[in-house]
Image (cartoon, rainbow, N blue to C red; front, side):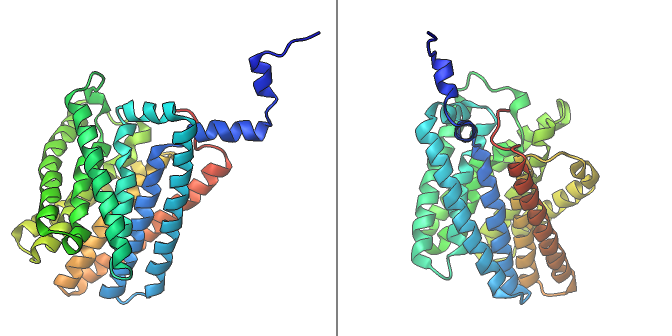
Length: 335
């Protein structure tokens, strides 16, 4: 008479169920970058309605889509946290993946901005939750940098901007929802440590081995801090002064630098990290739309229109590639 071992007992589970359970364990925190990119696209179309006169329905439809997407992804990651807390703990201790946890809080902040005009009360609660969560994550991740035992220069990449520099996003809605001093507090954190981290990231890029192929798309994150900083600074001061121009034109130069290497990016295989193209490009598009509104003329109008079309194409391609990757079971697998 044969005996049933634990291994053979596990094999009695339906194959599909076992596979789905295994995939949930590897559901990546970085997947919330999809929400950031899609929310950025929604905000760009909302702003384009005011500046370029594009149909309002596009921004509204995208806002509804990204809201539903955020809830779905949050449910899945919540299930992962309940069933596989050790897997979440491993991501929190990972020198690269830990920096993607603030994509959750940033997603809340972007949704708050998207609902600021149509549902200010909902925007307030989304913003409050996002700001508190982001502050907590900033302190936790920054603390891990200060008291680390496992970080090395090879782990540094532009995704390190996400925890600290993400604070710059908070004032965009915060200036209308809370005390201006609170918005200046978060803006100061993001701006100062952007400069610090930019120095470290450029040192790593200039003098050490190239980024791994999987992380190469994160180079686009370089666009986000000056672009978002420009938007937040204008909200705080209301003036297109010299410092605002420095932030915008720094972002524009970085965009030209990345565009000059477009062929290299087009040759890269698809990973979830490719969504790093989307939100930074959305931030630059929003900044350019604001420049178009502040300095009316054909130049910024054409730039804003071109960037909006490019952003829409990029997000559409990324969404299609993501769906194909899901169908091929190339996502939620061990790396």
